Image (cartoon, rainbow, N blue to C red):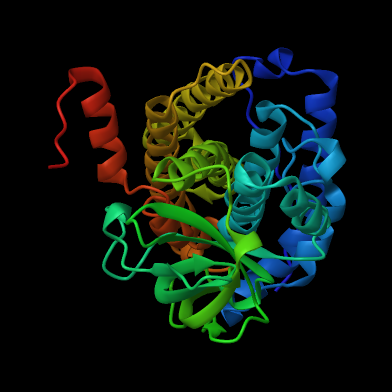
Length: 393
C-alpha cells in the first residue's frame, strides 16, 4: 500500500543552527527522496519480503554511497555530519534501505579506499559509488558473531593464486552483490581482506528467507568452495582485526544517526496521531499519560541528536574513539526501541497495521540493535574503556 509521508523533524533545541547550509541541503535532498521514492513502496516491499533493487542506482545518483570517500574515486568528499544526516533520513524511511547504503559506503567502499591498492580503488570505487555495482561485507560466521577472531574461513597461498574456503552468515546485500569484501585467515593465521567477485567459480550467495525483521533488505550467506582468488585481489594495506573493526566503527556512526531517524519518525507519527485521535470527547494528546510518553520521546531524541552531532565533529577532527562510537550506536538503538513501543501504544490497534510505519520500524530494530556489535557487547566496550578491565574473557 502507498501512504502519504507527512514527516516533520523535531528540533527542540534548535540544533539546525549547528548545521551548515550544505548540511541542510543534503538532508533535504535525501528527505525528499525518501518521501517521493521510498515511503510509497516500502510497506509493500516489507510485506512481500522483497528488496527494491531500483533503489541501488537511485541512492548512487543521490550520492548516498561513500559520501566521505574522495571525489576522485566517485565519492562525495563530504564530512561525517553529512554522512550521518543521509543515514538518518534513509533509516527514517526504512532500516533496510539505510543498511544497503551503510554496507556499500562504510563496509565495502571504505576498506577498499583505506586499505586497497590504487588499482583496486580505481577498479571498484566508481562503480560502487554510482550504484552500478552492489557490494557486501563478509565477517560474521554462523558460529562466530561477537567473536570474529574465531573465524574459520581460510585463504591458502597456492603460488600464483589463492584458494578461499569457508562461509559467512547474515550478510546484507549478499544475494545481489557484485563484489564482496571478505575477511579470512591466511596460512600464517593472520586476518586479511579479500575482494571476491560474483562470477568466481565456487562462490555462491544463497538468500536467507523467513525473516520478520529487515524484510525489505536482502540478506544471505556467502559460501566459498575452493574459490580461486588472484593475488591482486588481496587488500594490501592491513592485516589483523584492525581492518574489519575500523570499517565497523565507520558504519556504526551511520547506525547511530540512522536509528535516531527511525525514532524521529515514530515520534512524529505518534504526535500527529495524538493530536487527531479523540476519545472521551477530546484529543488523546490532551491526556497526561500520552503527554508523558511524547515528552519523554522528544527528550531522548534531543539528547541523541546532541550526542551524534558531537561524535561526528570529533570524527571529522580525527579524535573520535571506537568506544565513543559504540556508546552512540547503543544509545540510539536503545532509545529508538523505547520510542517505537510508546508510539505503538499511542496508536492503539492502528499501530500494528501497515497504515503506519511504527511496527515495521519496531521489527527492523530487532536486527539493528544486534548487528555490527550487539547491545551487550557495546555496553562491555564502554565498561572496558572506563574501567580498564576486559570483561570479554
